[in-house]
Amino acid sequence: MAPIQAQDKGPAVANLQQAMLFIVEKKQFSPADHSLDQWKQVMSDESAQQLFGQRTLQLLLALLPELHLPAAEFVTPAVADALNTVLQDLGAFAPGPTPTSTAQPAPTSGQWEYQMISVANATELLSQANTQGMHGWVLVGVVVDTARPDKYVGFLKRKKQ
Image (cartoon, rainbow, N blue to C red):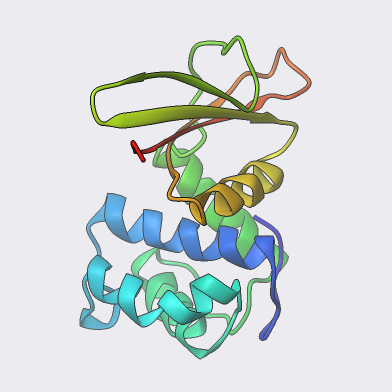
């Protein structure tokens, strides 16, 4: 995760928004007495615009104390590092088996289609996953294989269309 200022827009903000919601989900937090679904709804406009606006700031300000991190009104390098450590501890970047293809649809089964994205860094992976999200794809897993130049591999799925 990269440092982010108020009113920034783009993939780094989308990465932050997804990361914070991932932390809320995995740690089963209710920052500011809002459930995960409530935060998703409250942040939906900013998430769609990839904007670090008031709602994203509210979640950040509510989440940092629950993670025992110092308050900050934007994502400083120290906050970014701390959030990355939390994400690592939660298995967001867990190593796993080496994939064999990149950005190609995999065989489908049942009601789901599957796709894999392989890139050099986590920011690019989340950027591509966000782009695919506009087409109904959901990032369901991430694998890091340090032996490859495109070491970040994301697994996506969506309902068959």
